[in-house]
Length: 505
Image 1: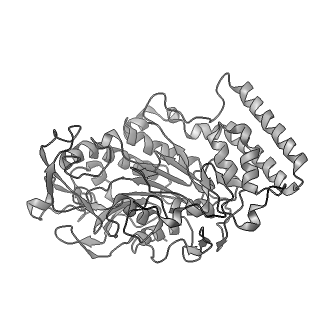
Image 2: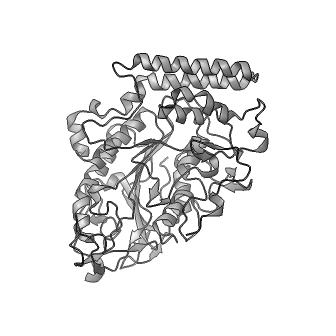
Image 3: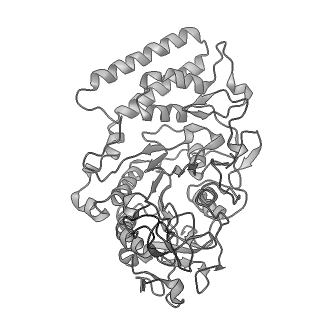
């Protein structure tokens, strides 16, 4: 497969930072005679803390030279800013078996699961989500998602960046909405990163499905990997543990020596002051107990952890809530892995999974984790500020297909056993939105009697993005950035926020 030209490193790139290209203009790049580019100064000056992942993140984010943008940057506020938690279902959830059941469709479409009433009269969901059925007054269902990306990479890129292309690409062409929001909300001192990715959304096989592209690596998320349900789960390099104080102090002294040496060689006072500020902020961030506390799930009551579920997805959602409560503005978390079944995602082709066995297997932890998150957001009075979004890149084929299994495993028969599946279906899909001050207890849009086509209130990827940006108080009509070729590129090209999801009041 050919590589997307727009994702290639430009010829005038001054060199990689953290393995990625920095998109600086010629005036920002400087030269090798002492006029070093600011990002290179940051990279060199923070070398003493190379082992600290938070250091690199903060160093590149706080005072990096900006990519030119049109439109105002979000202003500082004494109140906590609006925030988003995205629960991403990699591979695409079957809309007929979750939030858009079709009980009157022919048997070759509807599947074995019953539609059950929710606590909102007239709204039905699948029997697989009984906890969510009890709280439909706290979320809105969008049943009219439609896009043109038939593959997982293209479908995801459409949803995250509005890229209109249908073919799959190895790398994104446009920055994802998380990176855009991180850039537009940067500039203010903070104890925690703007965007934390708990089980990051990064690749689908060898395709990179999210990224900051020409905005630069400083707007990539702080990635939290590992299973937060494990008793020894911890985020590396946060806080000081017993016996490490001396080594941390030595690292700080080594960093100071490097900076002093640089000051003798470089006479650009403002740049050196910026690095000094970064040093202070970065060290404070590592030493600040709020950072380590936010990631420490052991501080939660056992009853709370039990409510979310003592499994990977439940604890991912609990960690997301803790981070948002502590001041993180964007948390993305991907539901994949062993809880999905044999192929560890929601891609329920018959060759991968027995689709209905897989749904029975995974929907219980899904229902528990997402319902607990929504319940907790409301219980803590965060429902006006925090928007919870649950979606994947597309729906699944309403008509059930059959094929031979390619491997035995959880939710899949032995090799050669014929089993049911549902394939990719970008023509229709469902999303869930909770909190965010929106009008809840409603269904937006509709598909036909078989769930095949959108017949009312079509929502495209850029409508989804416009809704996200509006909640984050970003005017998507005013902002653009310059891409690698220097072309002004809007953050979305067309689209408007989803009708019916306007904030109350």
